[in-house]
Length: 561
Image (cartoon, rainbow, N blue to C red; front, side):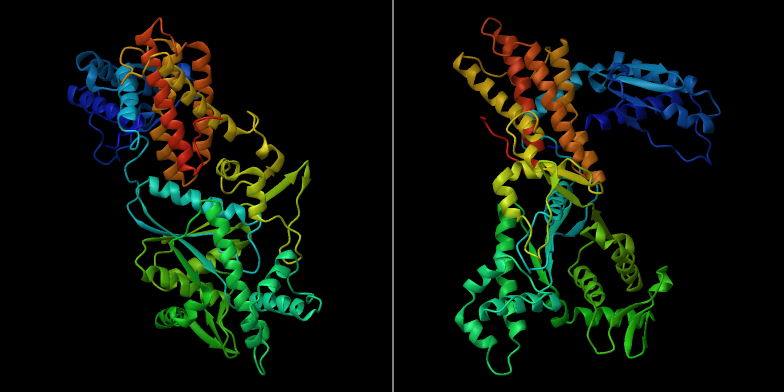
């Protein structure tokens, strides 16, 4: 069973108090022409002000023509009445009024006790939230051209896309992970020319690809492919390039698998042309009057949708542009029945966003259903010096090399802990450290420490209780219980924002709170078995929560370190 976040319970309690205050005459009925404001609650910056705060009274001041303090006092009185008459029916123990009209609210112990009991009783369901948007979503990410191994410059797109998919699924959405690759065109021919040149013993062309991986491809090139490519009249660069791109793609798939990133669908640009999706897209635009011919080329009237100039779809020589493939891809995706499309792109694709959304609108699709998530670039630093990367020049660190050096968990954490549109200085040496300086190590250590405590307790003949009822009066227990109980809200916020840095921040906070709890409260105490059992239960709920937070990020939760 999905337990509602405590924030939702508090919101409902305020809503009930509002209705009772109106029914009793303490507050008037809202004017008929006034919109009913939503009941908003938030966590106060200063915990001494309570667990939650609401500004509802200030939002009602204008339509009610009353002082916010008077409205807040009426609401607080009803909240206090419910707490006195039906204490188990309300999550709120105390409601205080603060100028200029805030309601400061403190949770009842039974509310926290129920949250801990729920985590212990149904750990698999703990943290799950009700579907915020019930929709079918296609998320296309990474999509690096198969002209060389994935390098650490591609890494952020892989992490952002995978983490986004995990968060969307946590919010009840149906997600399809997709990789789009360019298996034709000039870059593939350049790759083929590079391999062919080395195969002949010649230098790589100036615009070709260099690096050890090209020499490796030469060593793997089958004789039958080379014979086909060098036959009379054969397109050597095209044949060798197509083969080499296939081999590179196999390596990309292995690298992503090592990263625990999977894809449901692999779509090639060539298939969009071969299967007629580009032609269908052009025809949709033509039927709606949004294309025209000029100088032998076919143009999209992008300026009708706010663009600074119209865009060529088909060149005068009959060759389609990349933009033609883009609009064909939109048509193909919606043709598969998706409600929403998300493209995870680097910041350098900013100029493409408007034209693709404009084309989607021109073809009759909802432009709001076409979302581009642009992630900022990463500066990889080692010993204070930036690591340079160039796939074509062969001067780069592969993703496999990065993972072998720092590990998947550290890599995932560092990318998950930053907002998508925030630049990152990725300190490779820090990510390698096995100490509390490394935040993922710090959080994982808290999980492993709890596992060790449970083992130690078992050796002493102690076992966790099934709940913590009656044991939250002391400060260490209360602080940890409050931190654990906040987890569903963190997930709900992450789903709404489509971001994960709130989860990593929460995991650090929870780990810190647990370390403080363990410092101040003796958990394994044979002289006080009942208290020890309750503290072990609270530690167990913390362990479950840490594991769930790490799991959502694709990070392991070790039992020992």
